[in-house]
Length: 371
Image (cartoon, rainbow, N blue to C red; front, top):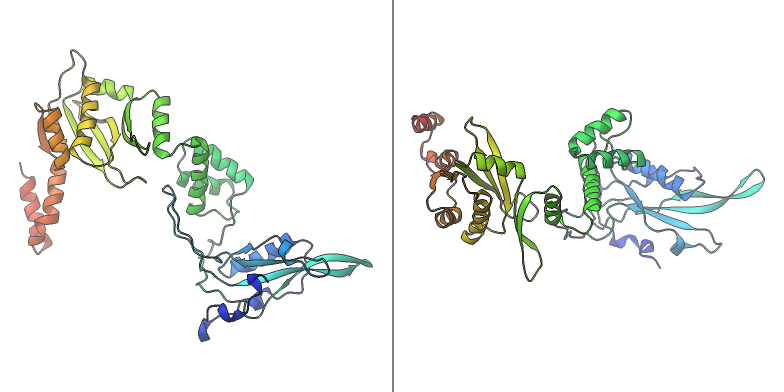
């Protein structure tokens, strides 16, 4: 016996506030195919804040006369599953919902001949969802998915480097009369395309492969045991030319836990005599330790080590102790300054809370900014 045929005692009890959705699916319409029956039921489900899936192909539910039966279940049936995908962490929406209806084959007389058709059958007690149904705003109904033409357009735009939000706007301009995909659906499609392009490489390996293809000057380190990419340093040839022309000031800062690996991403920025800034290089390291900062600073020194090129004068950083220690070892002759923006942020977070009113805080800040 299939688990679909179990008694209703295992279904969740909603009490007096439960809603039986079975009456919505009670119909005398005959459908030519199982897909026609499913599409009709799916439309009703969408209009009432849920979605259905085909539970099986009908092979396990043959009737004695050889005709088939197939179940359509709530999309949230089944046990919840935890995702272990680093690139797409997500929470499972499955919650063991027991809602179901059945499509069965029957014989009907048509033009004096017996014809096989499908009709929808409901089961007592099987019309309840054990979760809240979705409430859609006007014009924002459930979107089933991208069709072949839209997928081709998304692929073309993704490979051209267009951002998903701009692709979504482009889809709306192309077919304003059609329901538009949600941001999640579009991001999933673009993520799938990028994954196909990079093949077996993970995100960090793909970044390194693209740097090699674009002829970046680069160094990297691989863990001897796990074979994982741990350190990356990359600099564009044009950026190196600018750095060698204007090596006087380097500003360094890191973004922390903003990538799927939760590793620090270090940006090194130079400044021209006209006040314009340019990116010198970028580096990803496993942790913000002295040794890791020392590794990237040695690489930075390597791209500047050319006869006749002026040496560095000033480094500007936040109060990252590991970086400050590495600077003293690799560039002992270079002046080090703390970034005023970071200093003011620290004062605002730890000192200004002592001043009770906004007016007092603004007065203190204005005094600090005076030359």
